[in-house]
Length: 332
Ligand code: PBG
Image (cartoon, rainbow, N blue to C red; front, top):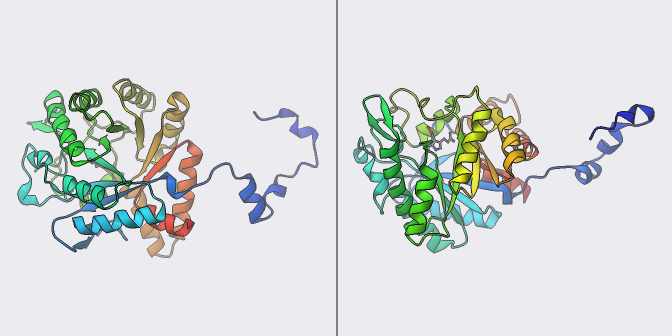
């Protein structure tokens, strides 16, 4: 790609193509648009309830009616998809996370309400037990051990309940082995063959998730860490094997998570598989930028925008970001 004869042109000036906004726009290789976004939202019990998340400035937990309003805002801004995460009443949490299978839980109720009001809005639902378990883990626990196959059996049921509520994009985030294939088979057997799977394929055991755990109320509950099922941040070849496995099992789209410190993974996944590849700009990444902005240490709006274009440059086809609405507003 790089022409080694460039040195033969002593008058070549890189800065000519940077001289004005117009020329910079003309030669830009990547652009961010509202079309790129999945906007994650947190749902909580009640009506007309809006509870700020302390560790995520500008993000609120919303009751179902306000989730519907947010979906309308997303539609009006051209954002094609929302992701819905629940703050489960602690009284409803159990070691087995049974509330995940309740067809009237907060996620399923939100999906039904959003689909009724904004039928074209895509809805992404997490498949994992952590918002519903007393121990805060994504799977079933036996002593210190997260049980794999027993968990997958429950996740399959959770996915079916969500798809039956109208969820069009099932997003397993639990990192159990074999869950994508099991969910795909169950969806097909239930006549839900149009429901797609966005696999959290390369999901790392990251401290950048902490504000999210605050938002869904699992931060205090979580016993230990998730390193026996989420990936080691030291590894990259392993990410490709995770992605290959999920694709073989039927994933329609894959995700790399977290985002900003993992741009090399996004690039390798995109280059190797060419499947729609999403980056999750996770809660900690969002909050770092927001809090620095609140201190006046940087321009948070510009930093968010820069982060987004860098995701596109790294090869992401789309981005899950809590800043989706504010960026879409700015792009309008
Ligand atoms: C649940 C889940 C997590 C996130 C998305 N789904 C947390 C975790 O795995 O502990 C993190 C999202 C974020 O930090 O924004 N399995």
